[in-house]
Length: 331
Image (cartoon, rainbow, N blue to C red; front, side, top):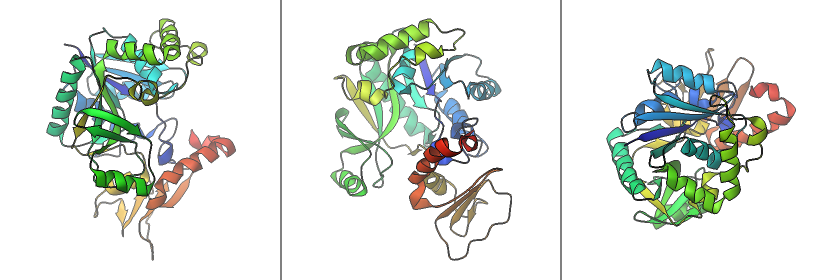
């Protein structure tokens, strides 16, 4: 049975600027025990998958190749997007390149996951449901009222609803109710099942993605045809509309490492990155903090960012402003 880890690696990690740049997004930064999140993803899923397919962008495909070749993953497939068209299309490209009965384990490239045995058990459960024609997502059992994730309301393996990122009061309510899970953004299904559901619910995405793929050259998708594909997430396009959805409630440790707050929690007290209850990244200088706690200081060759960890989500606003005012700082 072909089980393919489809790795979506097109993100830019805007909430981790200035560490994360377009030329080297967060998933390629070797700051996690000397490995990158992309590399950890490849290694973790090689235990259950027998092939890797990377759907990435023109700015980072060589970074993926370098890691795959280093890890001797010679049997990998590659699709390079000319422009990001969101996850519904990215997954369609992958599914259309595989046999209909191939099991796809679709994962982002930038998650940090622990408890390998628990993780493998969740994957096995998802594969069993995928073989029965379901589109399976993974929901993480929450341990705090997180406002940076979407939520899944569920009863057992049945999905009742998908919820947007909540405010704090709503997140606290979800935690108290006990039947809400963090939406991990990971999926498992047969290639043919996904394409059938995409065709049913978003035929324009299905058709334009197929045309772009048919005109790809050596795995590189054409820009003109790519821009005709509606940009929509797989959640909106399929998962929230299909009647074939299941969820695997999961308890493995998980973080999308999408903010400096997540990095703050990742580095333990006593590590060289933690200085007096604060976090210092990228600086080769001696740093002291006086009268400050929960501060993050990030230094690169051309930028310095200082923030309170509680404002970690607001870094994206800085990124968006710099896109207009000084895009050179994002490259």
